[in-house]
Image (cartoon, rainbow, N blue to C red; front, side, top):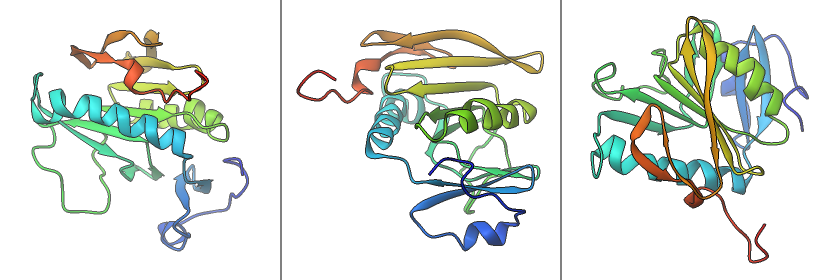
Length: 192
């Protein structure tokens, strides 16, 4: 099912009524429903969170100072979106609220591309994150084994760089520590 398969005028009640095996978002007043991410997608997202968590959340081998959450529900104005990962500097969000969503835009978001979500992540959600002044936006392409890093500059996304393969990359805003990108990609026995 593509991200355009089910669209209708939406309220938050529509999201609450969805079955557990889908992700619902509200974009420009329309309900956008997508299947839950595939396991390769979830593995990449989880691996990236693990790489960032020690040095940037806990301060083990790095500066700490971040909250990093998987699939947080964000209420950004009238839009409701669910990025694969999001991070807030602890100086902006001293504690994680005891709430089902956040209306405080994160400092960093990451989307892991799936075949049915490419346009939605790259175009639609990218514009929402820009509009709400998220500082950094990463796009992870598991098939290409790349991370595109973008920084918000003068109200537009500016490409910082594309990082990939098995390199140890220093990618803003997490450039204080080199990230072993090879740990993100699942490699099958045949090398693919």
